[in-house]
Each structure stands twice: as structure tokens, then as C-alpha cells.
Image 1: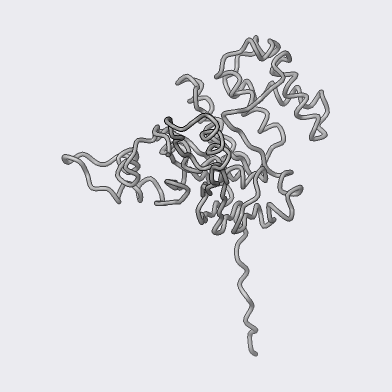
Image 2: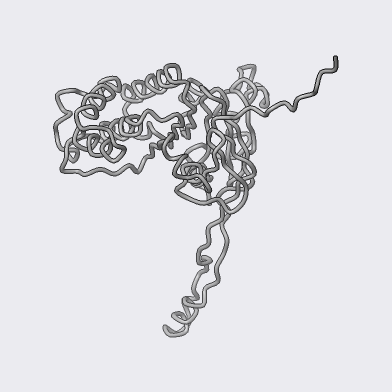
Amino acid sequence: MSIEEKEVEQPIHGLSVREVTKDFHRTKRTKLAENLHFYQRLRQFFKREKETIRAVDNISLEVGIGEIYGILGANGSGKSTLIRCISTLLLPDAGSIHVFGDNVVTESLKVRQVMNRVSVEASFFKRLSSTENLIYAARLYGISAEAAEKKAREILERLGFNAARMDEEMENLSRGMQQKVAIARALLTSPMLLLLDEPTTGLDPKSKRDVQAFIEDIRRERHAVIVLTTHDMAEAERLCDKIAIIDKGRFIAEGTVQELIARVPSLNGAPATLEDVFIALTGKDIGDEEE
């Protein structure tokens, strides 16, 4: 009896990014001649040429269910632009992005239902309390006020947020406390894809540890897909299953921490660190700005 060969189905990754490119267009930066007459300089200003800035350049990545994927890059390297493309806030100019098999461009509404994003520029209603802000956000997703308040307080407590200050106006809270509220807001909907764009930037050491521990809990409890951009090498080493280094919009290295460190020889007999790898491959410090 013959056995028919069946086509092996490709596994559906939590997140699949294929050869994505994103360009921005801006006025070309040129120095106006100081010795020209005012009207000549004014005419020269309005005749400035346009230039194309490639923020994301042919990037591909895959993140499996229950994995944390880290992206390390200097400011302006393209990591936040990539996150915005994944989150449907920007449309890629080329390539494709799929979340659990769904295309983020053609099936954006479906994709948004299973993802959420945390960024360093999170905004709130400053005159409302953290709890009120979270209830408002949850109501937009159809969660009842009662259920939202209960869940919001539970998440904030797990993030180490002082329960006595949950009813204070947001404008009276520290930067670190506001960032915890931003993280709680993203988790209210129990997303299966969590995009964390520098979530611990500006946090004190204890708050940073609280957030990192909660990220580990989310991965363990929900098997969520998590993408994390960070400047913190120790944070990347602690949390990420795989790390990509981005420079000028391109991935120049990808692998586990051990695989990346193996690419750089030891210094004076001491093993290389992730920071050594970053500097060796990019020629810059993680805190530098891209030109």
C-alpha cells in the first residue's frame, strides 16, 4: 500500500518579518551661505532638495511563541521605526509582516486585537489617576469598568506600584511610576504579542527589576510573544532568548547572547561582554546618536 506524500506545513511563528524596508523623506540639510543677501538666502532656503532616509533596511526576523526577542541599537538606529511597522502604526514600503499568520497591512484590525505596545513616549490624561486612566483604556476594548479596575490594580501591584498612590493624579507621579502605568495599560487586554520599546528607560533600579520580573512572568504564564528594544545590556542578557543588533537600519548580527559573544575575542584574557560585542560591531557606544 503506497503512502501519499503530504506537504509539510510551515510552522506559524508568533511574529514573522520578511525583508521589511521603511523610508522617510525630509528636506536635505545644507548650510546656507552667510554672505548672501537676505532674499537670496531666503530663496536658497525654499529651493532645498529632498533626501531619503532609510530607517529600516531589508530586515527579517522570526519570533516563536513564548520567546523574547531583543533588539539593541543606538538612538536613531531604526529599532523604534521597526516596532511601529509591526504595531501597524506605520506601513512598510517593502516586505511583509505577519502576526500569528495574519498580515499587519491587510488584516490590521485583526492583528491589533492580539497585540499591544509600550513606548517611552506614552501619554495619559494627566488630571486623572492611574486607575482612572487604565479603566478608560480598558473600556475602549469593551472591558467593564469593574473588571478593568480589579485587573488594573492587580497588574500595578505586581509591578511594584505603591497601592496608596493609585488614586493620585498622574501629573503628581514620578516618571518611573508613569511608565509602570503605561506597561499596565498594555497588559490589560492580555495581548499575545507584546511590543516593548525601551520600557525601562528612566526607571530607578528597583522599578527596573520589578518590570523585568513581570516581563518574565508574562512570558511564562501566557507563552506570549515579546519583542523588546533596549539600551540596557544586562536587561537584554537577562530577558532575551535571541538578540539582534541594529545599525543604520540594518541587522548586522543576530543570535543568542552566547553566540554573539563568541564573535568577539576575549580582552586581556577576560571574556567579552555584550557591550564589547556591540562596540566591536558598530564602532559606537549604545548611548550614541545615529547621524
